[in-house]
Image (cartoon, rainbow, N blue to C red; front, side):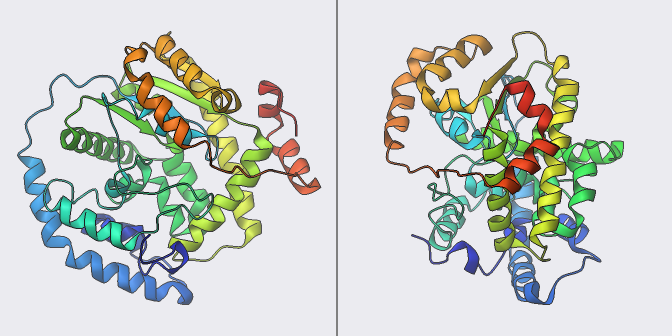
Length: 367
């Protein structure tokens, strides 16, 4: 159990940002009075870490060129579509490397001082996620957009700190539709660097990604990784809507530097879903035959081992029987986890049907 609960954390995730990224993201930004103390503490601690960041950069510059890196596997899907569960099951395969929770916060402290800073983080961080009580740990797999938000200003996840700019971050850095070529290049270079460091640290060749924002970036990802494999998860949109509203509100409340009303937040969630759905459907045809698997989360949840085996076969991910025991052990440990039971009100029903009706019809979902 960490010393702090999420709502009482004295810093936000920008504590692990390099100087350039921190300055680019925060310069000229409006910081609400209620969030100013957290901003000041975050800025002060981040500044103290600069010398250690510099040491890590020197270590990175001296890394040997990667050879034999295999095609990455990207788990896609809107937030709360079950990507975490699928990521955790597949990451039981020890041939995969992934971004850890520690790396998401301190991507610049991976190559020197990692044991000490991991210990510090484990002492202070909560042991469970605030929204669903899922276990947290410094070494557990995590979505890399949090790490990327500490490595480049061109990351969608800066909206967690500055929610009033969600529309801007969506158009620029969720789908990159209004981003410049230089911004696209900067983001992809940060992604390459993050993956390279993660694989170097764990001594593996194949990166397993779980990152909802990547759902809107298939074209960019294929330009860099033309033979990448993709797993696209869908889930009942009524569940996704209610769960995402709760997830976004709880997460923003822990790291925000601006406050946002529930009405504004809900509007942006609706638009985010539309943007990801539109981009994915428009670009999925670009993925080579045999490199894409579309999965209903309800099917994976009902039979995770059987569905994992199917994914290994369809995407040629390797010998499934070799990894089956580790996955079965992980799934067995999750059996006591209590899921939330949803009882949809009229607001949820009307909102989803009016705004996400195309997804409902395509995947034949009902309340």
